[in-house]
Image 1: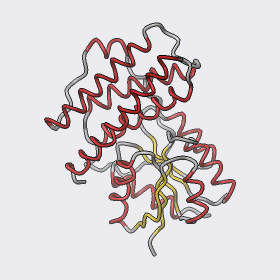
Image 2: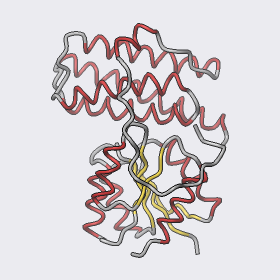
Image 3: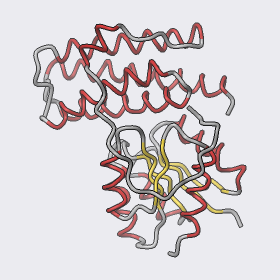
Image 4: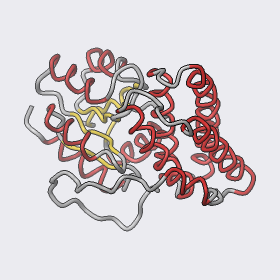
Length: 123
Length: 143
């Protein structure tokens, strides 16, 4: 059965790119969110297996969204999407409970490997 | 990855973002401590950096990265607290607009003006990446 993924990023470009990288590898993108508030709502509605979470988003940061999602579901599996220069924020997200992270610009094989690893984590 | 499709997506989103940045700069001109406007500019510049890096437009991602660092320092200090700050932001906006226009016309982004790069200063030194187990290191990279 396909791993169900919710993709959160304020850039359509990035949402589309993640979708194109992971869908041929057996993941199913069940939803997209463009801000840190709607990702929490979509998580509650869709109950995905994994969330890919951009850090810099409008309305609420990706890190705040991680905290809210984990408050709803402590077993939620979230992979942060980070960029050059965001190392401290990635650490903060991991400390907040994110499972792992992927780095922009994306290396497709690394994205897939990381998401597979996150999907295998115990809930 | 279809480069034409993603170039078009970049052009569409970057053009929207630059328009929004321009409007936010007008807000900041009225009030250099307008936190929401500064946050918006930061987020949009960050987004342009990510898209530029993904398509290999190094000039775009480099200028955006330097600008993002400068914006981050202003955010930490509660606003634009340097007399030359806003003019510098407007020059960066023009520089990014020129690059996006060049991508539209030629498919490549020209380097930014050296004076602009010098005025912004270097991007913050990269911190060590958080500890992570070794990942596959593929040859191809979307960026």
